[in-house]
Structures are given as C-alpha cells and as structure tokens.
Image (cartoon, rainbow, N blue to C red; front, side, top):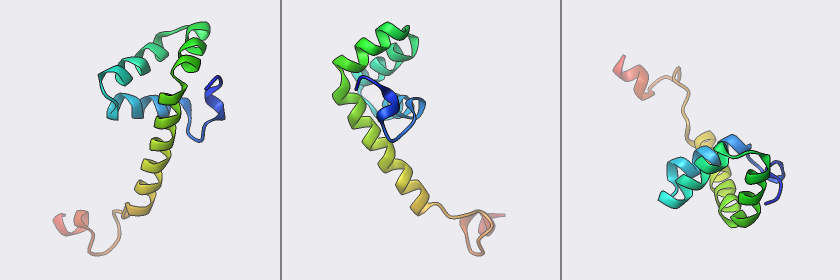
Length: 84
C-alpha cells in the first residue's frame, strides 16, 4: 500500500476502522501512522500494507451495511418515532 489514495475508502476512515476494530497492534499502527511524517507514513504503509488493505475492505463492508440497514428517523413506525 504505497499510496493510501489507491484504496476505496479515505485514509482517515480506514484509520478510524483500525482504531475501533483492530487489535492492540493494529490500533497502535493507526496511531503511529497519524503521528508520522510523510516518510515514516510511507514506510509504515509499505511494511504493513496487508493490514491497511484488510481494513480498507472492512471499512467498505461496514459502510455498505450501514447504508443498507439504516432506517430514516422520520419513517412511520421507526423506533425513534415509537419512543417519542
């Protein structure tokens, strides 16, 4: 993964997914990536490209599920309307 822009999801969204769903190593990798300068981000991206690719796919999958399953709040019979 030499260039983050080659992925389906934005760099920030991929890093958020890594921080939220990853194990301790992947969470720290995302934090290091955010803290690093351009040269060190490039090194991390090349060395751990498999993790970035995996979480790009996971992010894309999560986004697709959210779009498919989200119910607008103003739909009659939705939970938010029933509880209000």
